[in-house]
Amino acid sequence: MILRIINSKPMNNRWRKTFSIGSLCLLLSLPAWAQKDESVYQEFSGYIGADYRYFFEDGLYGGQKNSFPSLVIQPEYLYEWNGGDNRIKFIGFGRFDRDSRRTHFDVRELYYQTVKNNWELSIGFKKVFWGKTEAVHLVDIINQTDFVESFDGEEKLGEAMVQFSYASSIGTFDLFYLPYFRKRVFPGERGRLRTSFIIDNDDVAFESDAEETRPSFAARWSAFTGPFDIGLSYFNGTGREPFFRQTTGGDFQLFYGIIEQIGIDIQATTGPVLWKVESIARKSDFQDMWALAAGIEYSFFDVASTGLDIGIVAEYLHDDRGLLSFSSLDNDLFAGTRFAFNDTQSTEFLIGGVFDLDKSTKLWSIEGSRRLGNSWKAEVEMRLFDDVDQNEFLNFIRRDSFLQFSLNKYF
Image (cartoon, rainbow, N blue to C red; front, top):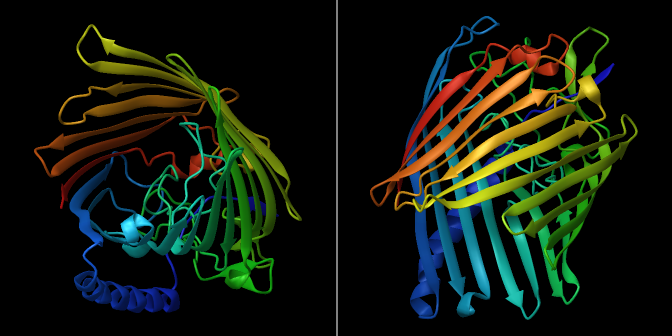
């Protein structure tokens, strides 16, 4: 039996060591270059902060904790020359957490980019985002999900790639060569938001004999025409979502198959209304599937002359895998309200919920942020699992409702 699931992982030790040494040598050499060329621009920035995540109920499984204080750092460095036509960009990330699996370090980005007329070339580790909808990003497949970092899959690991982009009168064409695959990492024994068994992140099987070194390829065309922002994408390579494969001994093993995926994402802007849709069709030797996310966002601007913008969001979510969909978003409705105060502190909140149209499951969420002074930022996130149906994959984490506060110092 093969089940498909979601999960994530940082790079292995060999790659981490290789890129750490390479990154250090590269960054140490840049100031010397800068002294020789007055036209260069360089900037060091980032943030350091602290999080506290509290789970309201005791975990379903032995060893799980309720409170998770952690420290996080994200340094960034940008070096440009030739008027910005050439650049080297670095973004690192590190977290120290009570869950050993969630304590991880990653090179989010470290790439060289050159721009010439209407084309550009990027080589190195990079993050690329595709998507339009709010509740889920079906077409976003280039980067592996950093599953121990974010519950909703918003955070991604850096991906090794060669990206070539060409801008033409009929849109922008992007081609990707992805030489190395990164596995996901699941929470450890103390961690929450996990299955009843501890997933062995090293016990992994691949469809390809080349395993992680089997290259993947992707292409995307995107364009603006009238009110439409359109993207068409194609991916061929190792799927980012693993399967759970049951072994003869009764254990579960992660399995990554080779997939082909085509996707489309469209956003149309008509006055205060944004119309959004994402859809994918995926083919493999183990499972074919298609999924859809479609909805609208209606905005009320400057309500009562207070500067407050309120956006009403509604999206329908479908995945034909049904109960085999790890996200459980097989026939669901997302509804939410976005508040943007447009004040000097950039205060904003998104309050919403996902409602299963066939079963009793509901997932409530609150996300918000506000700047404090010139260099501090406070964030809050809450997820509440409500009346989760026993047949859904979310049933594994039905007692993992949590509240998280974050305070970050930017430099």
